Amino acid sequence: MSGLDFEKPIIELETKINELKNLGKTRKVDLDPEIKKLEQKAAKMKEEIYSKLTDWQRVQIARHPLRPYTLDYINMMTSEFIEVHGDRLFADDLALVGGFAKLNGHRIMIMGHQKGRDTKDNIRRNFGCAHPEGYRKAMRLMRLAEKFGLPVVVLIDTPGAYPGVGAEERGQAQAIAENLMDMAQLKTPVVATIIGEGGSGGALGVAVADRVLILQNAYYSVISPEGCASILWRSSTKAPEAANALKLTGEHLLKFGIVDEVVAEPEGGAHRDPEAIAAQLKKAILRNIKELTPLSPEELLDQRYEKFRRMGHFQTVEA
Image (tube, rainbow, N blue to C red; front, side):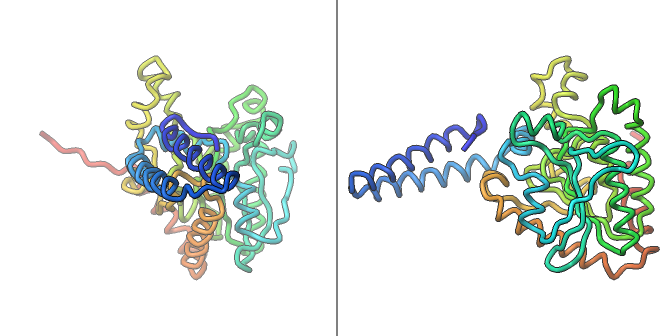
């Protein structure tokens, strides 16, 4: 398994355990006592490391190349997925996918950012950075969901919206702004989850939801730690300090009222047990949909409006 810098002691120990297991089988030698000691040591080491992760380390886990992406969650959580393509204006953006599906028998509209697993696929998916046609496709699907009375499920995992010349020429800023306005008025339940990276307007463009969830090792921020560090300290090497200052992980965001729920991940991150995190996320999404479904369209809109109006409240105290 590909390991991060702070995980190297764990990876080395796990490699040693596997070598001993293979040696025991090959030579038919009883190495169970030694293996058990190493497994206990590995378990203690994991607990020490993963219970004290910094915000920067969580950002690194959020970007792990083996972490489940949107299509992985769709395959693990839903059935009868029918992908819908194109924005009916320009093209089909493969960085943002979506369509009809069933979640435990409930019909939903599900969509999200999709990254690639290798260089070729990442180029095809534009590294999960959507163009204007991606955001217009997302809004087209949401309007379809509203028309048929279907809940909308959004999975967010993007460094940000694509900032290239072509995207700007085709109205990137306007596409995102229109999504913010239209999602605020959508008369059907919307549950969004940040499953990895939640970068700036690229994430917010599909995140104006009744309930915003975040996975334990995901992040949601107005700017990347590297971008923030380049502005404030003139050096991207200060990214760890920037990550801490931005308060971009679930623990902080829940306290600030930016997200509504933090979904716990398996020890070490979602990539270590994709099936387990998919089951956890599915349970959380279903619960939130069940709570939102009885509300009338007017109640949904009022609560959604109040939710976002509460963000950013502050008090001025005179000395």
